[in-house]
Image 1 (cartoon, rainbow, N blue to C red):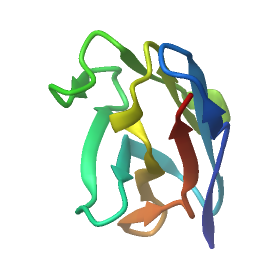
Image 2: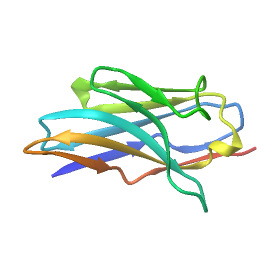
Image 3: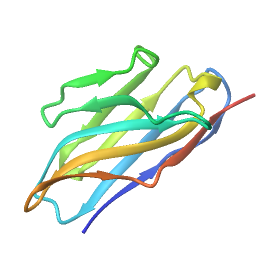
Image 4: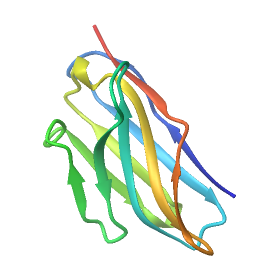
Length: 118
C-alpha cells in the first residue's frame, strides 16, 4: 500500500507565500517523477510543476518564476514553494508520484486547499 499525504495549504493574501509538502509512505522501492497539479472550481485539473528523480524540473507558464518544486529523496517527499501568490492560484493542489515496487504505478494525494484572497 502506498499513501501520499499533502500538507501546507491554507489562506494567504495576494503577494504572500506558502510551502506545500507531500510525503509518500508504504511499499516503495523507488520514486520516479513527482509533481503538483491543481484544480480550481469549475475547471479541469492542470499541471503545475514536475520533478524527476534526478532533479530536472518543469513548470507551467503560469507559475514560472514564482513557484519552485523540489524533493528530498531520502524522505520520499516533494515540496512546492509558492511565492507572489495571486487570486488565480486559488485551487485544490494535488501531488502525484510514479512509485515503483513490484511495478511502477501512479499515485495521487487527497489534495490540499490553497486560497489566495484579501
